[in-house]
Image (tube, rainbow, N blue to C red):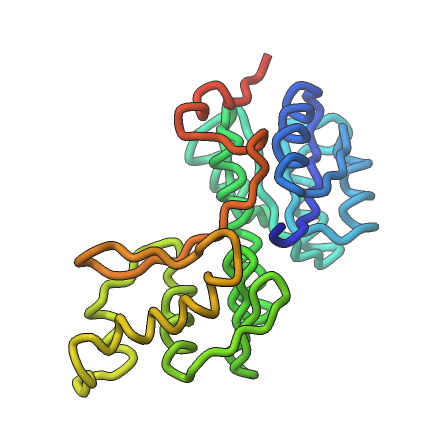
Length: 250
């Protein structure tokens, strides 16, 4: 299981709330919910959340006002994703000016929302702990030069540490062989097989003791780091399911 994230959803549409709960609880998230702006603001102030999903059109206090109040009066920096029924530039500008970090338009895909939540949380963690890199259950501390996977310490060589840092910074994108060689050795590459040998040693630490591999080789291109897929089958959504997994306003 990866990190346990806590989400507050402030939304007055019970169908959307039910869909969000069903999808994210299956992924291991913990959720709180408010149906109007006033109680939403109270929850946001009283508790610590990793991200807030905030509907723009709310009874009691609208999402824009709630966002402004949280940021200006309470200096609350929790990442906020605005949920809105309209996709116009002026709406986006108002949302961002009120202090929102991201924006999704209804109907939205829960898979896409999940990706955006994870990206926001990672960005937020990087701002507060710039020396800590996290991808899935893998964590790297660049100050202490330590690495762990699912809480287990990894014994990495100095070169292995550098390679893993490059892969984690780029994740989930591919890093080319040439790029890794350039960043690790510059022009003095020991020999043509050096990188492959180091990646083999790195894999023995990062992947071998675990059921799911995280480092992928793309033949002739380079390497890629992905979060291990430990999602239970029931919660796993293939790209074909995304259409059915869209949340619509009634």
